[in-house]
Amino acid sequence: MKQIKYDQYQLIKLAFSKLVFIALFTPLMMTACSDSSSSSQTNNKIDYTKNYPPSNGGTLIDAMTGEPSGLIAMIAGESAASAIAGNIFNSLLKYDKNLELTGELAGSWDVSDDQKTITFHLKPNLKWADNQPLTSDDVLFTWQKVTDEKTRTPYGSDFKLVTKAETPDANTFRVTYAQPYAPALDTWAGLHILPKHLLKDQDINTTAFARNPVGSHYYKLEKWKNGQFLKLTRNENATQGQAKIDNLLSRIIPDKAAQFLELSADNIDSMGLNPIQYARIFPARPDLNKNIALYKELGNSYTYLGFNLKRKPFDDVRVRQAINYAINKQEIIDGVLLGLGEPVASPYKPGTRWSNPELKPYPYDPNKAKALLKAAGYEDHDGDGILDKDGKPFTFEILTNQNKEREMTGVLIQRRLNDIGIKANIRVLEWASFLGRFIKPKEFDVVVLGWSLSLDPDQYSIWHSSQQAPGQFNFISYSNPRVDKLLEAGRLELNPDKRMKIYHEFSKILLEDSPIVFLSAGYGLTAIHKRVRGISNPAPPAGIGHNTYEWYIPRAYARNEMSEH
Image 1 (cartoon, rainbow, N blue to C red):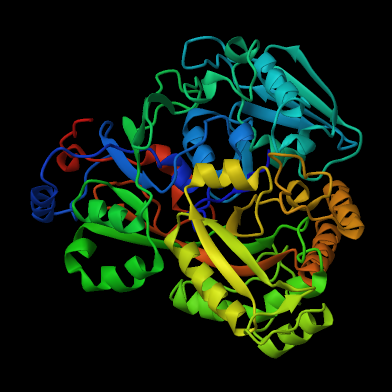
Image 2 (cartoon, rainbow, N blue to C red):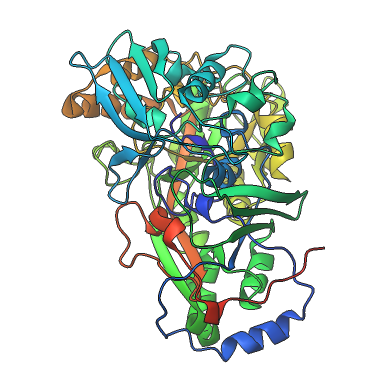
Protein backbone atom coordinates (compact mmCIF):
# COMPACT_ATOMS: atom_id res chain seq x y z
CA MET A 1 0.00 0.00 0.00
CA LYS A 2 1.88 3.01 -1.22
CA GLN A 3 1.32 6.05 0.92
CA ILE A 4 -1.02 7.85 -1.39
CA LYS A 5 -3.84 9.34 0.61
CA TYR A 6 -6.36 12.10 0.89
CA ASP A 7 -4.54 14.93 2.61
CA GLN A 8 -6.92 16.73 4.92
CA TYR A 9 -4.15 19.10 6.02
CA GLN A 10 -2.81 21.81 3.75
CA LEU A 11 0.15 19.55 3.01
CA ILE A 12 1.69 16.58 4.72
CA LYS A 13 4.12 18.07 7.18
CA LEU A 14 7.47 16.30 7.16
CA ALA A 15 8.25 13.25 5.05
CA PHE A 16 9.79 10.19 6.65
CA SER A 17 9.63 6.43 6.38
CA LYS A 18 5.96 6.02 5.63
CA LEU A 19 5.73 9.60 4.43
CA VAL A 20 3.64 10.73 7.32
CA PHE A 21 5.66 12.59 9.86
CA ILE A 22 3.17 14.17 12.04
CA ALA A 23 2.12 10.65 11.73
CA LEU A 24 4.48 9.58 14.37
CA PHE A 25 3.89 12.39 16.71
CA THR A 26 0.38 13.48 16.12
CA PRO A 27 -0.82 11.93 19.36
CA LEU A 28 -1.01 14.37 22.21
CA MET A 29 -2.46 15.48 25.43
CA MET A 30 -5.84 16.92 26.17
CA THR A 31 -7.08 20.23 27.34
CA ALA A 32 -5.46 21.66 30.38
CA CYS A 33 -7.56 22.44 33.40
CA SER A 34 -4.83 24.75 34.64
CA ASP A 35 -4.42 28.44 33.85
CA SER A 36 -2.64 28.56 30.50
CA SER A 37 -1.24 32.02 31.03
CA SER A 38 0.58 31.00 34.20
CA SER A 39 1.84 27.92 32.39
CA SER A 40 3.31 30.15 29.71
CA GLN A 41 4.90 32.48 32.23
CA THR A 42 6.53 29.58 34.06
CA ASN A 43 7.74 28.16 30.76
CA ASN A 44 9.41 31.46 29.83
CA LYS A 45 11.64 31.24 32.91
CA ILE A 46 13.16 27.92 31.89
CA ASP A 47 16.48 27.81 30.07
CA TYR A 48 16.13 25.34 27.20
CA THR A 49 19.72 25.71 26.01
CA LYS A 50 21.12 23.18 28.50
CA ASN A 51 22.11 19.71 27.32
CA TYR A 52 20.77 16.60 28.99
CA PRO A 53 21.44 12.94 28.18
CA PRO A 54 18.63 10.86 26.62
CA SER A 55 16.05 9.67 29.15
CA ASN A 56 12.74 7.83 29.10
CA GLY A 57 9.35 9.17 30.10
CA GLY A 58 7.14 12.18 29.55
CA THR A 59 4.24 13.04 27.28
CA LEU A 60 4.50 14.68 23.89
CA ILE A 61 1.44 16.78 23.05
CA ASP A 62 0.56 17.57 19.46
CA ALA A 63 -2.41 19.07 17.65
CA MET A 64 -4.18 17.75 14.58
CA THR A 65 -6.79 19.54 12.51
CA GLY A 66 -9.01 16.55 11.76
CA GLU A 67 -10.13 13.40 13.51
CA PRO A 68 -9.40 9.98 11.96
CA SER A 69 -12.37 8.12 10.52
CA GLY A 70 -10.80 4.91 11.87
CA LEU A 71 -7.38 3.40 12.50
CA ILE A 72 -7.26 0.73 9.79
CA ALA A 73 -5.33 2.76 7.22
CA MET A 74 -6.22 0.58 4.23
CA ILE A 75 -9.90 1.39 4.84
CA ALA A 76 -9.68 5.00 6.01
CA GLY A 77 -7.33 6.21 3.26
CA GLU A 78 -6.73 9.66 4.77
CA SER A 79 -3.69 11.27 6.33
CA ALA A 80 -5.18 11.63 9.83
CA ALA A 81 -5.78 7.88 10.04
CA SER A 82 -2.32 7.01 8.72
CA ALA A 83 -0.75 9.49 11.12
CA ILE A 84 -2.09 7.74 14.21
CA ALA A 85 -2.06 4.20 12.80
CA GLY A 86 1.60 4.61 11.84
CA ASN A 87 2.41 4.64 15.55
CA ILE A 88 0.40 1.49 16.25
CA PHE A 89 1.08 -0.85 13.32
CA ASN A 90 4.19 -2.08 11.53
CA SER A 91 4.86 -2.92 7.90
CA LEU A 92 7.27 -5.52 6.54
CA LEU A 93 9.63 -2.78 5.35
CA LYS A 94 10.22 0.91 5.99
CA TYR A 95 12.33 3.79 4.66
CA ASP A 96 15.38 4.87 6.64
CA LYS A 97 16.68 8.39 7.12
CA ASN A 98 18.30 8.34 3.67
CA LEU A 99 15.09 7.08 2.04
CA GLU A 100 16.53 3.63 1.51
CA LEU A 101 14.37 0.57 2.15
CA THR A 102 15.19 -1.40 5.25
CA GLY A 103 13.47 -4.05 7.31
CA GLU A 104 10.77 -3.41 9.89
CA LEU A 105 8.94 -6.66 10.66
CA ALA A 106 11.14 -8.33 8.08
CA GLY A 107 14.74 -8.89 9.12
CA SER A 108 15.73 -9.57 5.51
CA TRP A 109 14.26 -10.34 2.11
CA ASP A 110 15.31 -12.05 -1.11
CA VAL A 111 14.32 -11.24 -4.69
CA SER A 112 14.45 -14.05 -7.24
CA ASP A 113 16.64 -13.79 -10.33
CA ASP A 114 13.60 -13.27 -12.56
CA GLN A 115 12.43 -10.42 -10.26
CA LYS A 116 9.01 -12.05 -9.85
CA THR A 117 9.27 -13.55 -6.35
CA ILE A 118 10.04 -11.85 -3.05
CA THR A 119 10.66 -13.85 0.11
CA PHE A 120 10.42 -11.98 3.40
CA HIS A 121 12.07 -13.41 6.51
CA LEU A 122 10.41 -12.09 9.66
CA LYS A 123 12.40 -11.16 12.73
CA PRO A 124 12.14 -13.80 15.47
CA ASN A 125 9.79 -13.69 18.46
CA LEU A 126 7.52 -10.91 17.23
CA LYS A 127 4.44 -10.21 19.35
CA TRP A 128 1.24 -8.20 19.22
CA ALA A 129 0.45 -5.77 22.02
CA ASP A 130 -1.91 -8.39 23.52
CA ASN A 131 1.06 -10.77 23.84
CA GLN A 132 -0.03 -13.08 21.01
CA PRO A 133 2.64 -14.14 18.48
CA LEU A 134 2.93 -12.16 15.23
CA THR A 135 3.71 -14.59 12.40
CA SER A 136 3.64 -14.91 8.64
CA ASP A 137 -0.02 -15.98 8.95
CA ASP A 138 -0.82 -12.40 9.96
CA VAL A 139 0.97 -11.08 6.88
CA LEU A 140 -0.89 -13.52 4.63
CA PHE A 141 -4.19 -12.61 6.29
CA THR A 142 -3.54 -8.89 5.70
CA TRP A 143 -2.76 -9.55 2.03
CA GLN A 144 -5.98 -11.55 1.72
CA LYS A 145 -7.96 -8.69 3.24
CA VAL A 146 -6.48 -5.93 1.11
CA THR A 147 -7.17 -7.95 -2.05
CA ASP A 148 -10.66 -9.12 -1.04
CA GLU A 149 -13.29 -7.67 -3.37
CA LYS A 150 -15.51 -7.05 -0.34
CA THR A 151 -12.88 -4.82 1.29
CA ARG A 152 -13.59 -1.18 0.51
CA THR A 153 -10.01 -0.01 0.02
CA PRO A 154 -8.29 2.17 -2.60
CA TYR A 155 -5.07 0.17 -2.21
CA GLY A 156 -6.06 -3.28 -3.43
CA SER A 157 -4.81 -2.93 -7.01
CA ASP A 158 -1.14 -3.00 -5.92
CA PHE A 159 -1.54 -6.33 -4.16
CA LYS A 160 -3.85 -7.99 -6.66
CA LEU A 161 -0.82 -8.24 -8.94
CA VAL A 162 0.44 -10.97 -6.60
CA THR A 163 -0.49 -14.29 -8.21
CA LYS A 164 0.59 -16.43 -5.27
CA ALA A 165 1.16 -15.75 -1.59
CA GLU A 166 2.39 -18.43 0.79
CA THR A 167 3.82 -19.05 4.25
CA PRO A 168 6.47 -21.81 4.15
CA ASP A 169 6.84 -21.40 7.92
CA ALA A 170 5.83 -19.05 10.73
CA ASN A 171 8.67 -16.63 9.96
CA THR A 172 8.58 -16.69 6.16
CA PHE A 173 6.19 -14.94 3.76
CA ARG A 174 6.60 -15.31 -0.01
CA VAL A 175 4.83 -13.52 -2.87
CA THR A 176 5.04 -14.17 -6.59
CA TYR A 177 4.03 -11.76 -9.36
CA ALA A 178 3.09 -12.67 -12.92
CA GLN A 179 5.61 -10.09 -14.14
CA PRO A 180 8.32 -8.04 -12.45
CA TYR A 181 6.56 -5.21 -10.60
CA ALA A 182 8.68 -2.10 -10.09
CA PRO A 183 6.93 -0.66 -6.96
CA ALA A 184 6.63 -4.06 -5.25
CA LEU A 185 8.98 -3.44 -2.33
CA ASP A 186 7.60 0.07 -1.84
CA THR A 187 4.06 -1.31 -1.49
CA TRP A 188 5.14 -3.65 1.31
CA ALA A 189 6.65 -0.65 3.09
CA GLY A 190 3.19 0.89 3.29
CA LEU A 191 0.87 -1.98 4.22
CA HIS A 192 0.13 -2.14 7.94
CA ILE A 193 0.10 -5.77 9.06
CA LEU A 194 -3.09 -6.64 10.98
CA PRO A 195 -3.70 -9.35 13.63
CA LYS A 196 -5.48 -12.37 12.20
CA HIS A 197 -6.52 -13.70 15.61
CA LEU A 198 -8.63 -10.57 16.24
CA LEU A 199 -9.97 -9.87 12.75
CA LYS A 200 -10.45 -13.25 11.06
CA ASP A 201 -14.20 -13.32 11.80
CA GLN A 202 -14.77 -9.58 11.40
CA ASP A 203 -16.05 -7.43 8.54
CA ILE A 204 -13.00 -5.23 8.11
CA ASN A 205 -15.13 -2.41 6.67
CA THR A 206 -17.23 -2.03 9.81
CA THR A 207 -15.29 -3.71 12.62
CA ALA A 208 -15.05 -2.03 16.02
CA PHE A 209 -11.32 -2.85 15.84
CA ALA A 210 -10.90 0.36 13.83
CA ARG A 211 -11.75 2.29 16.99
CA ASN A 212 -9.91 -0.01 19.41
CA PRO A 213 -6.94 -1.46 17.54
CA VAL A 214 -4.23 -3.85 18.71
CA GLY A 215 -0.94 -3.39 16.92
CA SER A 216 2.76 -4.17 17.21
CA HIS A 217 4.56 -0.83 16.92
CA TYR A 218 6.00 1.55 19.51
CA TYR A 219 2.62 2.64 20.89
CA LYS A 220 -0.85 1.34 21.64
CA LEU A 221 -4.13 3.22 21.89
CA GLU A 222 -5.08 4.03 25.47
CA LYS A 223 -8.02 6.37 24.98
CA TRP A 224 -9.97 8.01 22.16
CA LYS A 225 -12.41 10.74 23.14
CA ASN A 226 -14.50 11.81 20.17
CA GLY A 227 -13.74 15.29 18.93
CA GLN A 228 -11.14 15.90 21.64
CA PHE A 229 -8.08 13.68 21.63
CA LEU A 230 -6.41 10.33 21.03
CA LYS A 231 -3.89 9.19 23.58
CA LEU A 232 -1.27 6.53 22.91
CA THR A 233 0.99 4.89 25.46
CA ARG A 234 4.14 2.82 25.01
CA ASN A 235 3.66 -0.77 23.88
CA GLU A 236 5.74 -3.09 26.06
CA ASN A 237 5.76 -5.69 23.26
CA ALA A 238 6.88 -3.26 20.55
CA THR A 239 8.60 -5.19 17.77
CA GLN A 240 11.17 -2.43 17.19
CA GLY A 241 12.18 -1.95 20.81
CA GLN A 242 11.07 0.82 23.12
CA ALA A 243 10.51 4.45 22.24
CA LYS A 244 11.84 6.95 24.76
CA ILE A 245 8.71 9.05 25.23
CA ASP A 246 6.00 7.32 27.29
CA ASN A 247 2.85 8.94 25.91
CA LEU A 248 1.74 10.59 22.71
CA LEU A 249 -1.39 12.65 22.81
CA SER A 250 -3.10 14.20 19.80
CA ARG A 251 -5.51 16.95 20.56
CA ILE A 252 -8.08 17.56 17.86
CA ILE A 253 -8.14 21.32 17.25
CA PRO A 254 -9.53 22.11 13.76
CA ASP A 255 -8.61 25.80 13.85
CA LYS A 256 -4.94 26.73 13.38
CA ALA A 257 -5.38 29.95 15.33
CA ALA A 258 -6.65 27.99 18.31
CA GLN A 259 -3.73 25.58 17.96
CA PHE A 260 -1.33 28.50 17.98
CA LEU A 261 -2.83 29.87 21.19
CA GLU A 262 -2.33 26.47 22.81
CA LEU A 263 1.26 26.36 21.58
CA SER A 264 1.90 29.86 22.93
CA ALA A 265 0.41 28.87 26.30
CA ASP A 266 2.65 25.77 26.44
CA ASN A 267 -0.34 23.43 26.31
CA ILE A 268 0.96 21.59 23.23
CA ASP A 269 4.49 20.77 22.09
CA SER A 270 4.10 20.62 18.33
CA MET A 271 1.89 21.79 15.49
CA GLY A 272 1.97 22.45 11.78
CA LEU A 273 2.09 26.19 11.21
CA ASN A 274 0.37 28.16 8.50
CA PRO A 275 2.49 30.62 6.50
CA ILE A 276 1.30 33.68 8.44
CA GLN A 277 2.26 32.10 11.75
CA TYR A 278 5.63 31.00 10.38
CA ALA A 279 6.63 34.10 8.41
CA ARG A 280 5.00 36.94 10.36
CA ILE A 281 3.97 36.03 13.87
CA PHE A 282 7.04 34.06 14.97
CA PRO A 283 9.59 36.68 13.87
CA ALA A 284 7.69 39.25 15.94
CA ARG A 285 7.55 37.07 19.06
CA PRO A 286 10.99 36.60 20.66
CA ASP A 287 9.33 34.86 23.61
CA LEU A 288 8.17 32.11 21.25
CA ASN A 289 11.54 31.83 19.51
CA LYS A 290 13.17 31.30 22.89
CA ASN A 291 11.15 28.17 23.54
CA ILE A 292 10.12 26.83 20.15
CA ALA A 293 12.14 25.65 17.14
CA LEU A 294 10.87 25.99 13.57
CA TYR A 295 11.37 23.54 10.70
CA LYS A 296 10.67 24.05 7.00
CA GLU A 297 10.73 21.25 4.44
CA LEU A 298 9.18 20.72 1.02
CA GLY A 299 6.99 17.67 1.47
CA ASN A 300 5.71 15.03 -0.96
CA SER A 301 2.36 16.74 -1.39
CA TYR A 302 0.49 19.23 -3.51
CA THR A 303 -2.78 21.14 -3.43
CA TYR A 304 -5.17 21.12 -6.36
CA LEU A 305 -8.60 22.05 -7.65
CA GLY A 306 -10.31 18.92 -8.97
CA PHE A 307 -13.33 18.54 -11.25
CA ASN A 308 -16.09 15.94 -11.10
CA LEU A 309 -15.67 14.74 -14.68
CA LYS A 310 -19.05 12.99 -14.62
CA ARG A 311 -20.81 16.35 -14.32
CA LYS A 312 -21.27 18.89 -17.08
CA PRO A 313 -19.63 21.11 -18.12
CA PHE A 314 -16.47 19.61 -16.63
CA ASP A 315 -16.54 16.74 -19.11
CA ASP A 316 -15.44 19.34 -21.70
CA VAL A 317 -11.65 19.73 -21.75
CA ARG A 318 -12.00 23.30 -23.07
CA VAL A 319 -13.90 24.30 -19.92
CA ARG A 320 -11.29 22.68 -17.67
CA GLN A 321 -8.44 24.35 -19.52
CA ALA A 322 -10.25 27.70 -19.40
CA ILE A 323 -10.54 27.49 -15.62
CA ASN A 324 -6.86 26.52 -15.47
CA TYR A 325 -5.92 29.66 -17.39
CA ALA A 326 -8.26 31.79 -15.27
CA ILE A 327 -6.59 30.90 -11.96
CA ASN A 328 -3.54 32.89 -10.94
CA LYS A 329 -1.39 30.26 -9.18
CA GLN A 330 1.38 32.68 -8.22
CA GLU A 331 -1.24 34.87 -6.57
CA ILE A 332 -2.18 31.88 -4.40
CA ILE A 333 1.44 31.06 -3.57
CA ASP A 334 2.16 34.69 -2.66
CA GLY A 335 -1.13 35.58 -1.02
CA VAL A 336 -2.05 32.37 0.79
CA LEU A 337 1.34 30.72 1.33
CA LEU A 338 3.28 34.01 1.63
CA GLY A 339 5.73 32.66 -0.91
CA LEU A 340 6.32 29.46 1.08
CA GLY A 341 5.47 27.17 -1.78
CA GLU A 342 6.45 26.08 -5.26
CA PRO A 343 4.46 26.04 -8.51
CA VAL A 344 3.71 22.57 -9.86
CA ALA A 345 2.78 21.24 -13.28
CA SER A 346 2.77 17.51 -12.55
CA PRO A 347 1.72 15.25 -9.67
CA TYR A 348 5.31 14.87 -8.45
CA LYS A 349 7.54 16.68 -6.01
CA PRO A 350 9.41 19.50 -7.78
CA GLY A 351 13.08 18.78 -8.30
CA THR A 352 12.77 14.98 -8.31
CA ARG A 353 13.55 12.86 -11.36
CA TRP A 354 9.85 12.04 -11.77
CA SER A 355 8.87 15.69 -12.19
CA ASN A 356 9.04 16.55 -15.91
CA PRO A 357 11.22 19.69 -16.14
CA GLU A 358 9.73 20.62 -19.53
CA LEU A 359 6.26 21.16 -18.10
CA LYS A 360 5.12 24.55 -16.85
CA PRO A 361 1.89 25.50 -15.07
CA TYR A 362 -0.85 27.09 -17.17
CA PRO A 363 -0.08 30.82 -17.14
CA TYR A 364 -2.63 33.29 -15.83
CA ASP A 365 -4.38 34.34 -19.05
CA PRO A 366 -8.03 35.44 -18.65
CA ASN A 367 -8.35 36.31 -22.36
CA LYS A 368 -7.39 32.78 -23.36
CA ALA A 369 -9.82 31.46 -20.76
CA LYS A 370 -12.65 33.51 -22.25
CA ALA A 371 -11.80 32.35 -25.78
CA LEU A 372 -11.91 28.68 -24.72
CA LEU A 373 -15.23 29.19 -22.95
CA LYS A 374 -16.67 30.88 -26.05
CA ALA A 375 -15.52 27.94 -28.16
CA ALA A 376 -17.33 25.67 -25.68
CA GLY A 377 -20.54 27.65 -26.22
CA TYR A 378 -20.47 29.97 -23.19
CA GLU A 379 -21.36 33.64 -23.66
CA ASP A 380 -23.12 36.32 -21.64
CA HIS A 381 -26.36 36.36 -23.63
CA ASP A 382 -28.45 38.27 -21.08
CA GLY A 383 -25.87 40.88 -20.06
CA ASP A 384 -25.81 39.99 -16.33
CA GLY A 385 -22.06 39.40 -16.28
CA ILE A 386 -22.43 35.61 -15.93
CA LEU A 387 -21.75 33.33 -18.89
CA ASP A 388 -24.55 31.01 -19.93
CA LYS A 389 -25.23 28.20 -22.35
CA ASP A 390 -28.60 26.84 -23.43
CA GLY A 391 -30.25 29.31 -21.05
CA LYS A 392 -28.33 28.05 -17.98
CA PRO A 393 -25.84 30.30 -16.15
CA PHE A 394 -22.33 28.95 -15.56
CA THR A 395 -22.36 28.49 -11.81
CA PHE A 396 -21.06 25.73 -9.56
CA GLU A 397 -19.96 24.95 -6.01
CA ILE A 398 -16.39 24.61 -4.74
CA LEU A 399 -16.16 22.22 -1.79
CA THR A 400 -13.26 22.04 0.64
CA ASN A 401 -12.62 20.96 4.22
CA GLN A 402 -12.04 23.13 7.28
CA ASN A 403 -8.61 24.44 6.39
CA LYS A 404 -7.97 28.17 6.36
CA GLU A 405 -5.40 28.02 3.57
CA ARG A 406 -7.78 26.09 1.35
CA GLU A 407 -10.62 28.44 2.21
CA MET A 408 -8.45 31.43 1.28
CA THR A 409 -7.39 29.64 -1.90
CA GLY A 410 -11.05 29.10 -2.75
CA VAL A 411 -11.78 32.80 -2.30
CA LEU A 412 -8.98 33.80 -4.71
CA ILE A 413 -10.19 31.23 -7.25
CA GLN A 414 -13.77 32.47 -6.84
CA ARG A 415 -12.64 36.04 -7.54
CA ARG A 416 -10.68 35.14 -10.67
CA LEU A 417 -13.52 33.01 -12.05
CA ASN A 418 -15.94 35.87 -11.47
CA ASP A 419 -13.64 38.05 -13.60
CA ILE A 420 -14.31 35.84 -16.62
CA GLY A 421 -18.05 35.38 -15.99
CA ILE A 422 -18.21 32.23 -13.89
CA LYS A 423 -20.04 32.27 -10.55
CA ALA A 424 -18.53 29.89 -8.02
CA ASN A 425 -19.89 29.43 -4.50
CA ILE A 426 -17.66 28.10 -1.71
CA ARG A 427 -18.78 25.51 0.83
CA VAL A 428 -16.56 24.48 3.74
CA LEU A 429 -17.18 21.18 5.53
CA GLU A 430 -15.87 19.20 8.48
CA TRP A 431 -13.47 16.51 7.24
CA ALA A 432 -15.44 13.35 8.02
CA SER A 433 -18.60 14.76 6.47
CA PHE A 434 -16.66 16.09 3.49
CA LEU A 435 -15.16 12.68 2.83
CA GLY A 436 -18.16 10.50 3.63
CA ARG A 437 -21.03 12.52 2.18
CA PHE A 438 -19.38 14.12 -0.83
CA ILE A 439 -16.03 12.67 -1.91
CA LYS A 440 -16.65 8.93 -1.67
CA PRO A 441 -20.14 9.06 -3.28
CA LYS A 442 -18.90 11.71 -5.80
CA GLU A 443 -21.56 14.25 -4.86
CA PHE A 444 -19.65 17.41 -5.78
CA ASP A 445 -18.88 19.80 -8.63
CA VAL A 446 -15.36 20.95 -7.79
CA VAL A 447 -13.07 20.39 -4.78
CA VAL A 448 -9.96 22.00 -3.36
CA LEU A 449 -7.94 19.19 -1.83
CA GLY A 450 -4.44 17.77 -1.50
CA TRP A 451 -2.61 14.54 -2.28
CA SER A 452 0.25 13.22 -0.20
CA LEU A 453 2.30 10.78 -2.21
CA SER A 454 4.67 7.85 -2.02
CA LEU A 455 8.34 7.99 -2.89
CA ASP A 456 7.57 5.60 -5.73
CA PRO A 457 6.15 7.39 -8.82
CA ASP A 458 3.34 4.89 -9.45
CA GLN A 459 -0.03 6.66 -9.25
CA TYR A 460 -2.20 3.95 -10.70
CA SER A 461 -4.66 4.14 -7.80
CA ILE A 462 -5.37 7.84 -8.43
CA TRP A 463 -5.51 8.09 -12.22
CA HIS A 464 -6.26 4.68 -13.74
CA SER A 465 -9.81 4.39 -15.05
CA SER A 466 -10.35 1.14 -13.15
CA GLN A 467 -10.01 2.88 -9.77
CA GLN A 468 -13.34 4.71 -9.67
CA ALA A 469 -15.42 2.56 -7.30
CA PRO A 470 -16.77 4.13 -4.08
CA GLY A 471 -13.90 4.62 -1.64
CA GLN A 472 -11.20 4.41 -4.31
CA PHE A 473 -8.94 7.33 -5.11
CA ASN A 474 -10.03 8.18 -8.67
CA PHE A 475 -13.13 9.91 -7.31
CA ILE A 476 -12.99 12.63 -10.00
CA SER A 477 -13.69 9.82 -12.54
CA TYR A 478 -10.74 10.49 -14.81
CA SER A 479 -10.43 8.15 -17.78
CA ASN A 480 -7.88 8.28 -20.59
CA PRO A 481 -6.78 5.09 -22.43
CA ARG A 482 -3.31 6.49 -23.10
CA VAL A 483 -2.80 7.30 -19.43
CA ASP A 484 -4.05 3.84 -18.48
CA LYS A 485 -1.45 2.21 -20.73
CA LEU A 486 1.36 4.40 -19.41
CA LEU A 487 0.45 3.68 -15.79
CA GLU A 488 0.33 -0.03 -16.52
CA ALA A 489 3.71 0.13 -18.29
CA GLY A 490 5.30 2.19 -15.50
CA ARG A 491 4.52 -0.46 -12.92
CA LEU A 492 6.33 -3.13 -14.94
CA GLU A 493 9.39 -1.14 -16.05
CA LEU A 494 12.42 -1.81 -13.85
CA ASN A 495 14.88 0.44 -15.71
CA PRO A 496 14.80 3.80 -13.84
CA ASP A 497 15.55 5.90 -16.94
CA LYS A 498 12.89 4.21 -19.05
CA ARG A 499 10.46 4.43 -16.16
CA MET A 500 11.16 8.15 -15.82
CA LYS A 501 10.25 8.72 -19.48
CA ILE A 502 6.97 6.87 -18.98
CA TYR A 503 5.96 9.11 -16.08
CA HIS A 504 7.12 12.26 -17.87
CA GLU A 505 4.79 11.36 -20.75
CA PHE A 506 1.98 10.55 -18.31
CA SER A 507 2.42 13.97 -16.68
CA LYS A 508 2.36 15.73 -20.05
CA ILE A 509 -0.99 14.16 -20.98
CA LEU A 510 -2.41 14.90 -17.55
CA LEU A 511 -1.46 18.57 -17.83
CA GLU A 512 -3.13 18.80 -21.25
CA ASP A 513 -6.31 17.08 -20.05
CA SER A 514 -6.58 19.28 -16.94
CA PRO A 515 -8.72 16.89 -14.86
CA ILE A 516 -7.32 18.93 -11.98
CA VAL A 517 -5.67 22.33 -11.70
CA PHE A 518 -2.29 22.06 -9.96
CA LEU A 519 -2.16 24.93 -7.47
CA SER A 520 1.01 24.58 -5.41
CA ALA A 521 3.41 22.39 -3.49
CA GLY A 522 3.69 24.02 -0.10
CA TYR A 523 6.34 23.67 2.55
CA GLY A 524 5.74 21.70 5.69
CA LEU A 525 6.11 24.32 8.44
CA THR A 526 6.43 22.72 11.84
CA ALA A 527 6.90 24.14 15.31
CA ILE A 528 8.35 21.87 18.01
CA HIS A 529 9.03 22.92 21.58
CA LYS A 530 12.70 22.94 22.52
CA ARG A 531 12.00 20.63 25.46
CA VAL A 532 11.84 17.85 22.86
CA ARG A 533 15.35 16.54 22.15
CA GLY A 534 16.88 14.02 19.77
CA ILE A 535 15.72 15.77 16.60
CA SER A 536 18.22 15.48 13.74
CA ASN A 537 19.78 18.78 12.75
CA PRO A 538 20.38 19.24 9.91
CA ALA A 539 17.51 17.09 8.71
CA PRO A 540 18.39 14.03 6.62
CA PRO A 541 16.59 13.34 3.31
CA ALA A 542 13.71 11.66 5.13
CA GLY A 543 13.08 14.76 7.24
CA ILE A 544 13.28 15.40 10.95
CA GLY A 545 10.58 12.86 11.74
CA HIS A 546 12.61 9.85 10.66
CA ASN A 547 13.65 8.97 14.25
CA THR A 548 10.79 10.09 16.46
CA TYR A 549 11.20 6.95 18.56
CA GLU A 550 14.57 8.41 19.66
CA TRP A 551 13.13 11.78 20.60
CA TYR A 552 13.09 12.39 24.33
CA ILE A 553 12.06 14.95 26.93
CA PRO A 554 14.63 15.51 29.71
CA ARG A 555 13.09 15.14 33.15
CA ALA A 556 14.08 18.72 33.94
CA TYR A 557 11.85 19.91 31.09
CA ALA A 558 8.93 17.52 31.52
CA ARG A 559 5.60 19.26 31.99
CA ASN A 560 3.25 18.53 34.85
CA GLU A 561 0.70 16.04 33.54
CA MET A 562 -2.58 17.70 32.71
CA SER A 563 -5.84 16.16 33.76
CA GLU A 564 -8.31 14.80 31.24
CA HIS A 565 -11.86 15.98 31.06
